[in-house]
Length: 250
Image 1: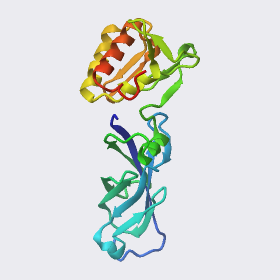
Image 2 (image 1 turned 90 degrees about the vertical axis):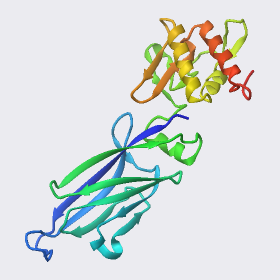
Image 3 (image 1 turned 45 degrees about the vertical axis):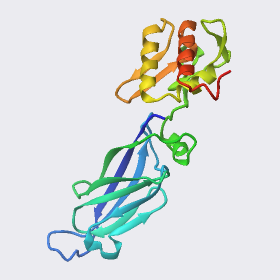
Image 4 (image 1 turned 60 degrees about the vertical axis):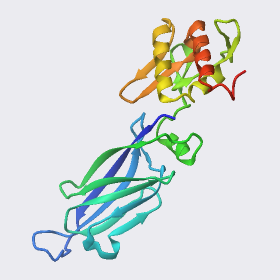
């Protein structure tokens, strides 16, 4: 399963508390708060950070018993009064039990400011709680995009998407290839084998073939139904040799 990225947005708001004495000349007492959201990977809107079960804020030691605060519900908001700026650790514990550490600078330069951090989720297990929650903030492997030009539905990653298309296609050897099973098998390949698949598709695709290789994001998308029969047969044979069709082969 490919690694997934998500953008965490930390929103800080602060204001001076009127007629309040901080006890430190020249430093007014302020009320500040921090909330955490995710930025949707596609439409860039703010969505709940529900991939996290809890968020722990490690505040300045001057907060005493409140220096460590754990929040367990969205938007994981922490709020305090104080006069000083400081740097804090924010520990984000995801639904898979892993903790991601972010360093956040609390400052009073603006009444409200946002800071974004990209977090990598290494090989999230398909069907897990974390994997399902990741779907709420962007695409995950196996999901399909919207309808493409000409009414054909293109598959995300390596898929056999398509509306009204046959489930089987003739391979170069005359045998029927189950496209869904081929898609499932290809997604079980290891990283090195997938690189070979990308190269095979690139070298043998036709003008009608649809593929997209996003090098920056480390993603490869192809619609199997747009590939020529000879290439379909080649991919089926390769997958069978690698043993990924052992459980799904027709």
